[in-house]
Length: 70
Image (cartoon, rainbow, N blue to C red; front, top):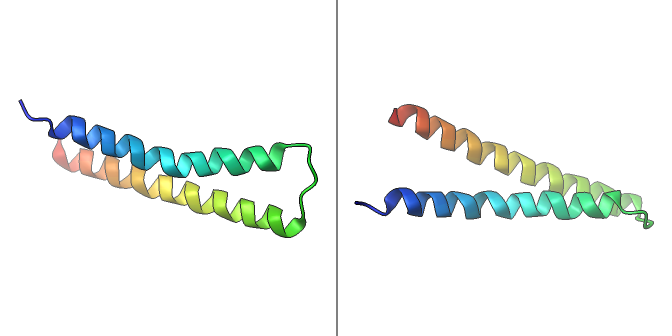
């Protein structure tokens, strides 16, 4: 039996967690009751957006590959 599906699953898990951690971390900062400058708020929102777009692209690629494999 091949370990390839398990390796792919581990790689996908890691690749998804990295941008998701960025989204959660910066969202927590924005949701906190601490003051934050407008520039920092825009920067954090931009980082959240970029990480979310990265997640979407990875999921699109994953599901596209899954569709072509079946």
